[in-house]
Length: 348
Image (cartoon, rainbow, N blue to C red; front, side, top):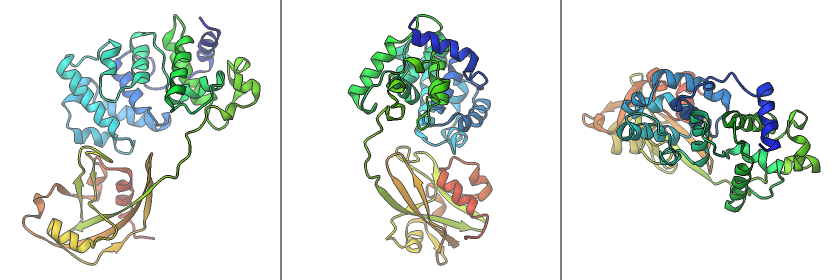
């Protein structure tokens, strides 16, 4: 066993995280769910969602049989909704091809929607004791510092090098403890901004620490100007109910319920009448808001529009009228949730 692995395993037994709700279980479904939820999301945010989701969908068969709207509703607020859609689709695939059992073979796990190499390895390690390397964001940072690996880990040649190092450092035994230790070290000690090198079990051999260049590794993503987009959201109100329409299954907020949108240059009242058959009062501007995605920022101009009359055929649109309280319980994006909450009080 490498000294690196041995030091991490010993450290984890004393200082690692042991009380997380998905720990101590070898149920691959629970492990899979936690690993997907933890992608790009902090542990503190994941815990309540994990418990609620697992309470409603306790196994693969239940998740596979569920309606996607309900799955997305239980995910609403956690973000990166493609994770939930992939989770649902993967459960359906397992129900169809594996009798609702989670596969043990690495290639079969890797073939499920939303599961990459590192996630498949983590599921295998925690569920079946499979000896395979992981390389999530935290682990990339640990290895890049420990071995002073130059370059941005998002570049293929850098990622390939880190994968080779990750595989070379694997212990022959105690793979589950080692894998968790590596994750915990990156999450709690070898953090991005202020690494606590005094508490690190491998700092004596860490090249970046020896050189005093910890925060210079790994190299950040090359900075580019983040593009901005703009949209107008139409908050149609009628007799105390709000109108939501379902977004297309692919793309931003795919499959979620949201407000109708128009270009900022379009006329809201005309759009309401010609596209929905709604006769409306003058639009009321609500406070603008900004929502940041991974690759762009969205500037949102909300318009509150009271609907005086609905043409008879209008309700056949791909939409639904709900009270604000019922809408808040649905599968809705974060900006929509904030706008709905704002309707409970007058604009500033």
